[in-house]
Length: 479
Image (cartoon, rainbow, N blue to C red):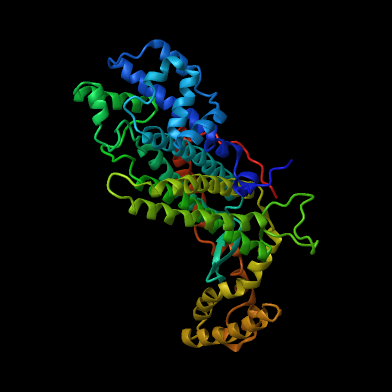
């Protein structure tokens, strides 16, 4: 019998198995058990009478939690953490008397969330590096390919295809900088007790403040964090979630900007996203080749961006040492933000690695606009031949407007021919006018800027980022 319950498309269609596993229940409970083990190890190291056999049994059952048994306990106790304390105790009976000793639920729930977010950021950093690596190759190949630049989506002066790609890459580069900072500065909640006063641990260690502080340092180190929060209430500051969601929203913004540009350029026929040999663009219009990957990025990005406000509201509405109105919200918002960002970056990598460049179309569009680009230089030629600058400007303006109107109606751009025939330009040879129509002369430093961007900014940045990133393997894009 098939499962008739609704399932999130983030799990069934978009996000990678790696990210789904990271936020999955078995992984989370495995982290809870590692936290309980680290706490018991540190408590024993600092003198509490926890037998070695308790630790041995705990280590033997870190990844084989009986989730069905825990669910039965939860139906009885109506408390998820205590359900797993009992389930773990069943598997590690020697540890039962010492499990969760001195801790509150937030010791496992909050610290595990921080562990998952840290590893999620590392996975996403790897995906950011993959996107940038694909775009680096694209920018290198197209660094000196002239194309129309647009302001207000109207033709402006020329740029190059590779230079435009560096604009997308710089956005993603800023995301890499932010992720590196967030991974490096993410703090552990630590062992703070029920309201953050560490009273229970102070009692366990008979008033020895030094041992309580050492306990927290040791547990923090065992879980791979350099620092813990200096103070907390019952939970770590929910501002941390908001800050992490800011970073994820930033990625969504960068990807949506690139995807929006590509949708415009695919309409122009200049750049096309990958299209598989048997892919169908429309159920009715068989000829269509739609930019569905870029469109999907846009849709997912709006969702991820919207979740940032959710985290901000949660952070701002916490009462005193804690309130529980964050719990249900965070169970939805945090995983979905990570899964949505994961899906976005998978799509972005797929697009960047397979962009199709229609050079002939790009050249045609440039040629259609080149006479307008050359008008300032033609003006200088006319002045050099003895003409009046203001009169020449008016001649160019009048002819340009007429030609532009004709081009918009499907006519050819004959501005050069019109000016060559105008008496005001009688002293300028046609060959001199034509010589100013080389597109490469109008792209400024664009090609060099590509090389400088890659060599001076991007490659050093990725070199710094790679040690912090988790390996992000290729993931299938479900068309």
